Amino acid sequence: MPDDSAGRRPQGFFTRLSHAGRAGGHTHGFVNPPLMRGSTVLYPSCADRVAYGKRRLDQALVYGTHGGPTHFALEDMIAEIEGGTRCQIVSTGLAAVTTPLLAFLNAGDHCLMPDSVYGPARTFAGGMLARMGVETNFYPPEIDAEALAAFIRPNTRVLYLESPGSHTFEVQDVPALSAAAHARGLKVLMDNTWGLHFFQPFGHGVDVSIQALTKYALGHSDALLGSITTASEEDWERVRTGALQLGQYASPDDCWLAIRGLRTLGVRLERQMESGLAVARWLAARPEIRQVLHPALPGAPGHALWKRDFAGAPSLFGVVFAPRFSAAATRAMIDSLELFGIGASWGGYESLALPTTGFLTRTAEQKDFGGPMMRLHIGLEDPADLIADLERGLAVLAGYQDAG
Ligand SMILES: Cc1ncc(COP(=O)(O)O)c(C=O)c1O
Image (cartoon, rainbow, N blue to C red; front, side):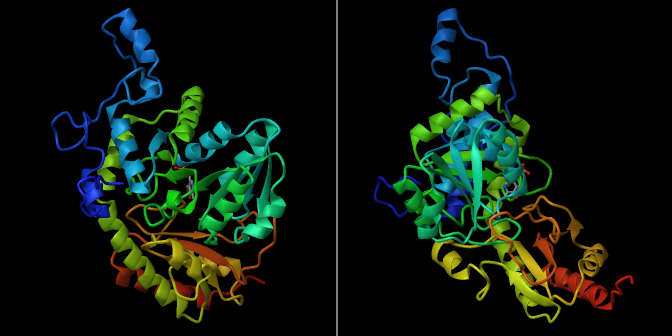
């Protein structure tokens, strides 16, 4: 958080985005932290090398894999945005999921994940974590604290949260679930990519916050990065040690792009939130649409929790078509869109549409959303153009003739 030692009011998000990561030696006199690349670090003497080796967890030049000034500046920025103590940058959003899971779980441990979890996190749990002797169970994401307690075993060590789910947008009661987990000594890890700065994880009981910086932070669909931020110094040391042991490294070029992207994050998010809500409202009023899964939309699932815990919403949401339409018809509609790319990685400046029917894996409960589904990401285009494109698409949907 910003320095309030002089009794001044806390600085606003836009101000902090403009100034974060520029303190200390990060900028070397320039406005922006420069891009610094390097593998080998040269030491003045053998004794200095030993001394620096002891500072392996610090923001110190030790060896390339330990990061350099460009990484450190980005880590400071993310810790600032999320209100955390310290941050570790890793190569991708998925690495930001897997690294803390590996850091906090041992053979014989048990982990709990929401049924709505990001697919590759589920794959990792069923793959490498299972091979290492860690068992994972999936719980209904909208579970309350009392029901969650029934899932916790003596060997459960991690409660993993993702709120809302990035395909089906169930909002979790993070403070209540975190409190229940802490009462049983669990560590609470959360994928906060959707919430970004709109959800302050550490004020809601989370210990470790995961971000796919690939999304809005980088914001231009041209690089991948992940961040792991912790509430406590102790947890950060555990994450950092794990990342170093795994050889986790992010290109400083990509960190530099993220720093650049973050300077405009506030204005992009504000604009994308408004455009996303405009498109969501328009869709919600259409007869072809059964439901819009946008937590910030009054009446949408999870809206009350969103209103309680979030300060805003990014522009990623789900759409459930009326059950009279087939999945093939909705795919034809998506294919016909001119301004929406068909792609997965959201948070860029461009709009995307993705069919979700048939791609969702559920094991805790078979949830019926009542019709075929798609996910939309709204970019920086004019919302009126996007709505016109969707209107043409809905005409294709209505006119689609199913084979046979
Ligand atoms: C919620 C969520 N978490 C993590 C990731 C992983 O990010 P990356 O693509 O950088 O590995 C994604 C990517 O789509 C995501 O949607």
